[in-house]
Length: 104
Image (cartoon, rainbow, N blue to C red):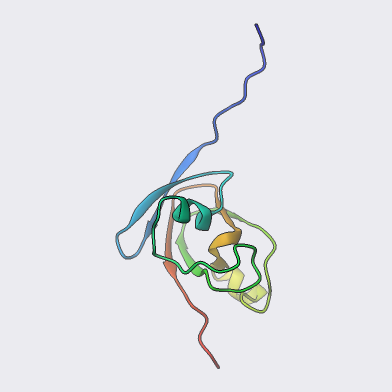
């Protein structure tokens, strides 16, 4: 009998300002959890941080931000809570909203 234990990842609640809510594991990207559950709250693009289609604003909560294109989220915007959903993994419950980039 093995004494090793593989802990189950923590799961957090992610709420959209539209009222939709879903569960996302701490080691799962927010966009992939939404896609897995067939939710349409955020656009889906390349899934790798390069296209910017899944741009969101994280209004509440803590998260890990993986590398992404600065063309879609600048360092200043990231500090204000903007991110790409395909590059966000939750460390707590989150409240998010879709935040497509506007043309200048």
